[in-house]
Length: 237
Length: 237
DNA sequence: TTGACAACATACCGGGTAGTATGTTCCCGT
DNA sequence: ACGGGAACATACTACCCGGTATGTTGTCAA
Image (cartoon, rainbow over all chains, first blue to last red; front, side, top):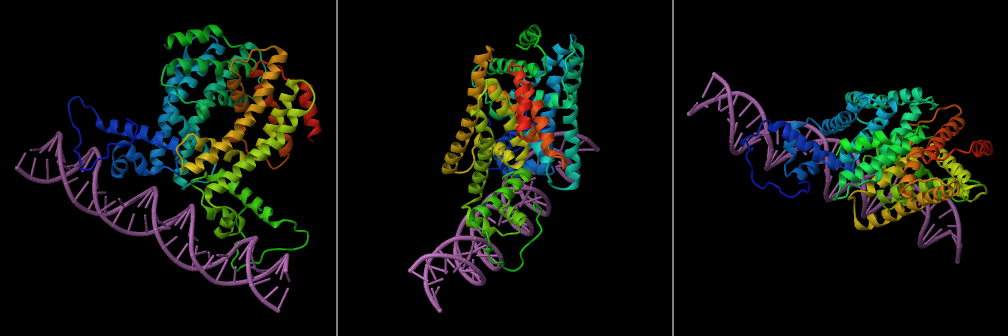
């Protein structure tokens, strides 16, 4: 489904068949996925709209029907990526248990989500890189700043929990901002080298995530709560 | 010196003055620095040769006189980046002391070099990203694979020392490859957010590096050797 | 039934850019 | 002193790609 092959030679009417609820958002989703794949493969600048369209077996017109510009498409992919992260991690921040246990579960959720939605995560990385540079117009820089801000809130979610855990366990973590950056750096590192195996991808991701969370927690000077980690792995299949 | 301003309107003869030993490699160096700056700012694909030339107050012809293609230029920048890393870190791997102390000093050297040569380091990151993707011709993929291989040797330098330290201190680090990846991930994280202050950049970098090395060592389950770290800071000004 | 609109496809234009071909100046060996 | 080559600059081309304008088909509401 992700290899560009079915190029339409003749015009094909929109499929309005059966249980098709909202084909619009469905098409949009397809585009987002294909775009994330392309951006991940070649980067934003080196990816053409035609590349994305070709991967869908569609044409440039279709994409410009759903997105105003290439930048808009990129932003939408970025938002979806953040959405996936929030959906995975935020619930873990509000369950019971000690701050340390919550932190461990958040880390697990984040790490697994990262590996499961790799293309989107690489787009996130490109987004921050773009933000540090002089890129494009003022309006685009504004929206980009907004997007980065949601990323900061996401990081703050971790920082707060880290501070709470450090407070409760009476460990000195130094600068909380630096600590949380290091913490996330460990979990995010998979983006640069992990590629999923065909078999048992989920199990592999979970065991990898566990090792990373262990490392990251030890780096903070905390002892990983093995019980909570095992429990999380059980309850997430 | 790095802001594009002095555009040559008339042809300027090559400066063959005084103590000019080898202006060739000097020009090459200037190009490499400018290219690293541009690639860091906008990424490889979004950077034009004219951009690099303009930053030097030179023209496209000059760059194509020294480099066969844009890719060649990128590779050269990559090599220079690896060279800087090796020059900084390798000496630390061969001094006396325990493996743990060596590891700490290597980490410090690596982290400081990273912040001191940020543009080159970002190019390195782009290089690995390029390698995971289908980019360009077969020949270019070959040279790129070579470059990545030198990067693997660099990582192996750390992995070996980590294993030695773990062996000596009798700590279990799990998968050594994963451990060294996490270790370097912490130190490398500065690439994504650090930007040097005007004042006391060196001192700031050293204290940042120290905190990161502490985190990374604790992550491995090791206790940072404060003495060796202080000594390193002293002997590196 | 009809016409307005959504959801695409097709055709085209213009700007930017990698690479090349060629001109110009200086230096250095003979 | 001179000719060849190094070290650039200038001029040009061919191509790719973002964006737009326009055509085509189905659908649904009135």
